[in-house]
Image (cartoon, rainbow, N blue to C red):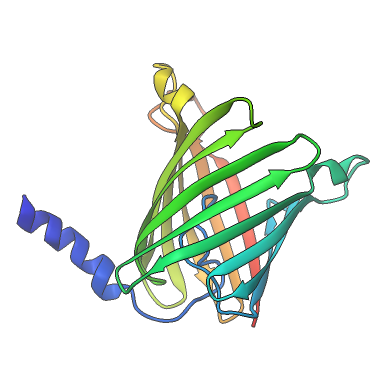
Length: 215
């Protein structure tokens, strides 16, 4: 068993070489522990409706703003600010804390990302919570990025929460997709669906994300 684990881990360590590429700060939805070089920033459009701009004030600190595309009045209520701070960065493992706050609802999202590997091939676990500062709900996610080539990657991600885990009728969400990466542009195409659930003719909810990196 130990030899099998080493063989599975070896591609993550050996293949995970190279420099930061656009989109490397997160999986399909959840953050990785990686941050951009100081002075870089990115703009991300999720599903055409959700927009995010983030700036690296240091090579380990991201600050960003998130808002709904102005398709209807009240879009400003979705405005949120976030920060991610990387506190561990080695050739094999990285870790970062993250926090996002929505001012209208007073709800915050906080967590820690642990990433094994590097920019090309990696595996990330997130443990976090959503809270109104009176109550909280634990959030969990795990996923990975496999660098098939320098510009093409496979992505998978599993997401759940403590309450949903305790619900015997729901096993979380699973996302599978691909990422196309250039020197400045990243394009994700994926499908997200309930994990191990009978959904009839429904296969997956389409998910599209585009990120542009300003160097």
